[in-house]
Image 1 (cartoon, rainbow, N blue to C red):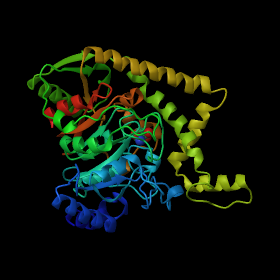
Image 2: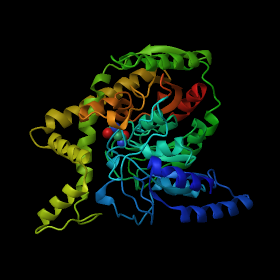
Image 3: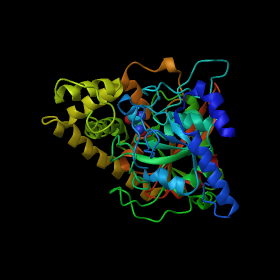
Image 4: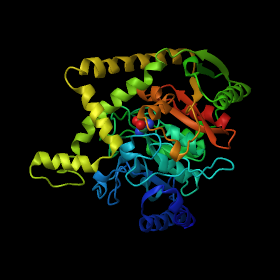
Length: 451
Ligand code: GLN
């Protein structure tokens, strides 16, 4: 009830929720009480969580923050949310995001932008929460929920976590099932937890992860007890500092925070080592070709016939056109156009195929680095949260924000962001840890030292 009250009193300002499901939550909480009384509590029994509105929830509207799915009520539950429910979690509702998870500001939502609960000292300017999981990050930061699900295709868990001063984990690709998660770029999309501490993230990930025959890219490996890995420490661990991440024009405070992180790890017994990831500079262009190509194909299913909104037309073609023109927002349309362009014959070899090859190089950079070190440490984003009205008009300027998060996504490697400090204006900054495939445990152990 306290969390429901917090949503009621604060979400008018934040706009973190698209849909609330308080009646269901109350019923779930009563059932949780009974299981606790019987000594049958699950891992997350009774804990109030929020769900990014990209996860299908049976009987509860799921919009992807798009007009084209404004009234879509899924007839089935995503595997990740089903896993959370099995462990007793209570869902307060569905959280805002960039439309179809495309963005880094949460300003592309058809349900309006989300306001970051943080403010610059001495200023009332509304700040973005980051994106695309901006509603999740804001709801956790404001204490509306104890944890939230996010999805991360190129940074959508880590960057909003950093902007809102919370922790967020993008597991190894294949760790969490994508079944029932509305697809953006299927070879990159991963679900993960966002919460105030890494311990809470560890607990949530234990519940969310696991093999699922309904997702052909889900990997059949046992899920470790992440909560136990938290206390392992970092003695003897080699921590790679990738020199290509020292980009020009980065605010000195972010550099200083990075140095601080290195110092914390060294004091705890780890050994920092400089490493090179030579193809880092190709990360952004590769991502914005591969992700958009996949998005254009995934979003072809919204045709006004099978799913969601329909805008009638005089012919079938006219119906498709009207539905897609009115249903999709500007950023989504831009990405579909670019995605179809790079996939079209004549450009396919020059863009899409080339991007796939470079993606393999980027992956090899990580594999080579992980022969020398156990984990990599970088900043999560090149800036702190910016104001709503500071969002650049040029979309490419917004894409540049993803410079530190997309390489791990392209490689499929696990990565997390933890809140590590404040900038001069009192805004949170995040540090990122990137790990070996399926070694989220080392990320939790190393992250814990810097929390
Ligand atoms: N900001 C990136 C993009 O706009 C990442 C989004 C995501 O991870 N879903 O594509």
